[in-house]
Length: 140
View 1 (cartoon, rainbow, N blue to C red):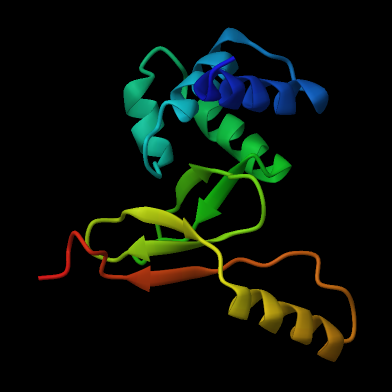
View 2: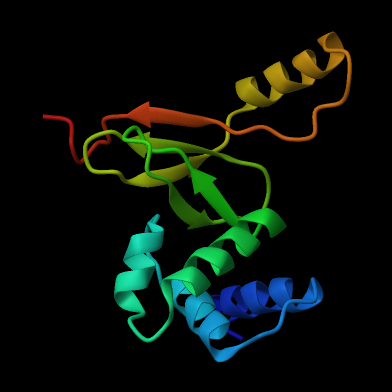
Protein backbone atom coordinates (compact mmCIF):
# COMPACT_ATOMS: atom_id res chain seq x y z
CA UNK A 1 0.00 0.00 0.00
CA UNK A 2 1.41 3.43 -0.94
CA UNK A 3 1.74 6.23 1.64
CA UNK A 4 -1.15 8.08 -0.04
CA UNK A 5 -3.36 4.97 0.07
CA UNK A 6 -2.37 4.44 3.71
CA UNK A 7 -3.31 8.02 4.65
CA UNK A 8 -6.73 7.67 2.98
CA UNK A 9 -7.15 4.26 4.60
CA UNK A 10 -6.24 5.82 7.96
CA UNK A 11 -8.79 8.64 7.55
CA UNK A 12 -11.51 6.23 6.52
CA UNK A 13 -10.54 3.75 9.25
CA UNK A 14 -10.55 6.56 11.81
CA UNK A 15 -14.14 7.43 10.92
CA UNK A 16 -15.21 3.80 10.68
CA UNK A 17 -13.62 2.84 14.01
CA UNK A 18 -15.63 5.57 15.72
CA UNK A 19 -18.90 4.32 14.30
CA UNK A 20 -19.47 6.92 11.59
CA UNK A 21 -21.13 5.82 8.36
CA UNK A 22 -18.78 5.81 5.38
CA UNK A 23 -20.96 7.47 2.79
CA UNK A 24 -19.64 8.26 -0.67
CA UNK A 25 -19.46 12.01 0.15
CA UNK A 26 -17.38 11.28 3.29
CA UNK A 27 -15.08 9.05 1.26
CA UNK A 28 -14.76 11.85 -1.33
CA UNK A 29 -13.81 14.32 1.42
CA UNK A 30 -11.20 11.88 2.83
CA UNK A 31 -9.73 11.38 -0.64
CA UNK A 32 -9.59 15.14 -1.26
CA UNK A 33 -7.88 15.72 2.09
CA UNK A 34 -5.22 13.09 1.50
CA UNK A 35 -4.32 14.69 -1.85
CA UNK A 36 -3.64 18.10 -0.30
CA UNK A 37 0.06 18.94 -0.56
CA UNK A 38 -0.23 21.80 1.91
CA UNK A 39 -2.56 23.04 4.61
CA UNK A 40 -6.03 23.78 3.28
CA UNK A 41 -9.22 25.57 4.22
CA UNK A 42 -12.68 24.09 4.33
CA UNK A 43 -13.51 26.40 1.42
CA UNK A 44 -10.66 24.86 -0.60
CA UNK A 45 -12.29 21.46 -0.15
CA UNK A 46 -15.77 22.77 -0.96
CA UNK A 47 -14.47 24.25 -4.21
CA UNK A 48 -12.72 21.02 -5.17
CA UNK A 49 -15.80 18.92 -4.34
CA UNK A 50 -18.78 20.62 -6.01
CA UNK A 51 -20.85 17.41 -5.82
CA UNK A 52 -20.45 17.21 -2.01
CA UNK A 53 -22.58 19.45 0.19
CA UNK A 54 -20.83 22.17 2.18
CA UNK A 55 -22.32 20.86 5.42
CA UNK A 56 -20.87 17.40 4.73
CA UNK A 57 -17.41 18.88 4.09
CA UNK A 58 -17.50 20.93 7.31
CA UNK A 59 -18.92 18.07 9.41
CA UNK A 60 -16.35 15.59 8.08
CA UNK A 61 -13.50 18.02 8.80
CA UNK A 62 -14.82 18.51 12.35
CA UNK A 63 -15.06 14.75 12.89
CA UNK A 64 -11.46 14.29 11.69
CA UNK A 65 -10.21 17.15 13.91
CA UNK A 66 -12.08 15.72 16.90
CA UNK A 67 -10.48 12.31 16.31
CA UNK A 68 -6.99 13.81 15.97
CA UNK A 69 -6.57 12.82 12.31
CA UNK A 70 -6.43 16.49 11.26
CA UNK A 71 -4.73 19.46 12.89
CA UNK A 72 -6.71 22.72 13.02
CA UNK A 73 -4.39 25.68 12.67
CA UNK A 74 -5.17 29.23 13.74
CA UNK A 75 -4.17 31.63 10.96
CA UNK A 76 -3.28 35.29 11.55
CA UNK A 77 -6.46 36.41 9.76
CA UNK A 78 -8.59 34.19 12.03
CA UNK A 79 -9.64 31.72 9.32
CA UNK A 80 -8.59 28.17 10.21
CA UNK A 81 -6.54 25.92 7.98
CA UNK A 82 -6.20 22.17 8.36
CA UNK A 83 -3.40 19.68 7.80
CA UNK A 84 -3.06 15.94 8.19
CA UNK A 85 -1.86 15.04 11.64
CA UNK A 86 1.60 13.57 11.24
CA UNK A 87 2.86 10.71 13.33
CA UNK A 88 4.17 11.84 16.67
CA UNK A 89 3.99 15.08 18.60
CA UNK A 90 4.77 18.25 16.66
CA UNK A 91 4.05 21.96 16.34
CA UNK A 92 3.57 24.26 13.35
CA UNK A 93 5.07 27.30 11.72
CA UNK A 94 2.68 29.45 9.71
CA UNK A 95 3.92 32.00 7.18
CA UNK A 96 2.08 35.28 7.73
CA UNK A 97 2.64 36.27 4.08
CA UNK A 98 1.80 33.19 2.00
CA UNK A 99 0.08 30.95 4.56
CA UNK A 100 2.52 28.03 4.15
CA UNK A 101 2.34 25.63 7.10
CA UNK A 102 5.21 23.40 8.22
CA UNK A 103 5.67 20.95 11.09
CA UNK A 104 8.53 21.23 13.56
CA UNK A 105 9.76 19.54 16.71
CA UNK A 106 11.94 21.16 19.31
CA UNK A 107 13.45 19.63 22.42
CA UNK A 108 13.40 22.99 24.25
CA UNK A 109 9.62 23.21 23.84
CA UNK A 110 9.23 19.62 25.02
CA UNK A 111 11.38 20.30 28.10
CA UNK A 112 9.31 23.41 28.86
CA UNK A 113 6.09 21.38 28.68
CA UNK A 114 7.48 18.73 31.04
CA UNK A 115 8.54 21.47 33.46
CA UNK A 116 5.15 23.15 33.22
CA UNK A 117 3.43 19.84 33.98
CA UNK A 118 5.33 19.73 37.30
CA UNK A 119 4.31 23.29 38.20
CA UNK A 120 0.58 23.26 37.52
CA UNK A 121 -2.18 21.85 39.67
CA UNK A 122 -3.72 19.27 37.38
CA UNK A 123 -2.81 17.26 34.33
CA UNK A 124 -2.04 18.66 30.89
CA UNK A 125 -4.40 17.01 28.41
CA UNK A 126 -3.27 18.88 25.30
CA UNK A 127 -1.84 22.05 23.86
CA UNK A 128 -1.38 23.87 20.56
CA UNK A 129 1.56 25.84 19.26
CA UNK A 130 1.79 27.81 16.06
CA UNK A 131 4.83 30.00 15.44
CA UNK A 132 4.13 32.77 12.93
CA UNK A 133 7.00 33.43 10.52
CA UNK A 134 8.04 34.97 7.23
CA UNK A 135 9.02 31.75 5.44
CA UNK A 136 12.20 31.45 3.41
CA UNK A 137 10.20 31.83 0.18
CA UNK A 138 8.76 35.16 1.36
CA UNK A 139 11.79 36.76 3.02
CA UNK A 140 13.06 39.53 0.72
